[in-house]
Image (tube, rainbow over all chains, first blue to last red; front, side):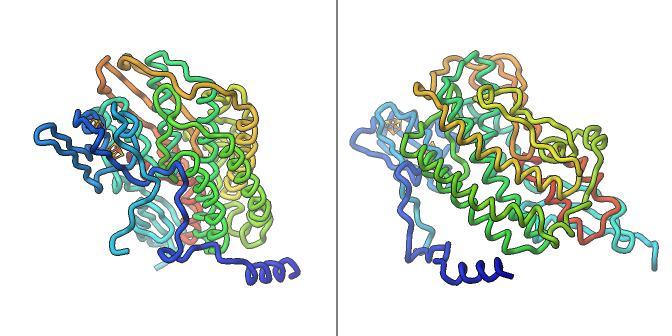
Amino acid sequence: MVSLLKSVINNVLRKPETRCYPVERRAPFAGSRGHVEMDPSTCTFCGVCARKCPANALTVSKDPRSWTLEPYKCIVCGYCADICPKKSISMNPNHGLPGGI
Amino acid sequence: MPGSKSIIPFGPQHPVFPEPLQLRLVLEDEKVVEALPAIGYVHRGIEKLAEKKEYTQNIFLVERICGICSFMHALAYCQGIEMLMDVTVPDRARYLRVIWSELHRLHSHLLWLGLLADSFGFESLFMQSWRSREAVMDIMEATAGGRVIISTCIIGGVRRDISEELMAEVLKTVDVLERDLEIIRPVVFDDYSVKQRLVGTGRITSEQAYDLGSVGPVARACGIARDFRETGYAAYKEIKVTPVTETGGDAYARARVRIREMYQSIDIVRQAVRDIPAGDIAVPARGNPEGEVISRVEQPRGEVIYYIKGDGTKNLERLRVRTPTFANMAPLLTMLPGCELANVPVIVLSIDPCISCTER
Ligand code: SF4
Ligand code: SF4
């Protein structure tokens, strides 16, 4: 009974564990793999990332120069960022927002 | 009419199942006399796909076999390829692998505890254990970049290092977890209602467990002291693991094993953080795997077996995975006959089924 009372009081006084998303958002952790970002100023359109991407989410062509990421195929593994010889790809820690927010 | 049999389909969609599995229960009144499983609802053809991808890309594929013990799948796969290619993993990487493995075990067992509590209607325990689990998810995201599928294991080591500050955070997380477990443990171990539902439910004998090839906590709850971490892969050579065993063989014993294993994991994480040597985290692996190998790792649900056959090209010839839940299916079907229909969810959840693993 005493321990029950303790729990009740604790629960009344404690802040909720949940967050009122999307009004209140937790800042992403520094190393989080949120989404892929490519810097077109350094990219040579060599196509290594497209060949190595395990989910076939990237399409790169040299002529005409294009680099396309299919966000619904991407599994956010970060392998392209590791493998790019020019280090043009980086992982932005911010997660993409769900549709409509 | 008393004595007549009826068949009740349990699943594929059932509130207690996190994943689709069908058990056709042959009932005599309320008593189960036979259980016939039907699997295949989440078969994704991963083994076939692995033959089409490069062996380096497969790491990300095998991680997706299971959403709970993903790191250990990658670990088993990478260890297999490393054996084929004669790669020696740096010491620091071996310790980092242990830290992430044990964090995975912790969150897997907490997830299981919530699901088991849910199966007998103890919703507040379900909420509390999942709340504690969030701490592990957060530290995983902070150290590895992902909550569950952390993609840090690569052939030759790991992709990320854990800095000093983050190591301190890891220790803080396991301290918080230990504190939470101190509250959760007496509830599972001693609570009258919980014991009413768990003690004696789904009991199998040690001989049955052995003969049917059960693995992991299901085997250890029958007193079979078998834990693959004892063989000393990764840094388990230096960090000694003694299998946690119970003798009851019922759902209660399995729950006790897993709760005690969480304490063990917390200890292992502390030891690993304390003893981790400085140095490289990966060595380059050149060439292609050739030959065949069997690689085994202890997952939260038991031992996983990877059979890898390479032919010297960048594509594998064959990848075969025997997951722990698959091994525990036969014991499950032995536990069910004779139980009441109301106990079926508890028994099924007591083996901690992972259907995605089973079907790949
Ligand atoms: S690998 Fe790097 S440089 Fe090459 S196409 Fe991809 S982003 Fe550009
Ligand atoms: S993060 Fe992974 S899946 Fe996404 S584009 Fe890069 S390599 Fe492909």
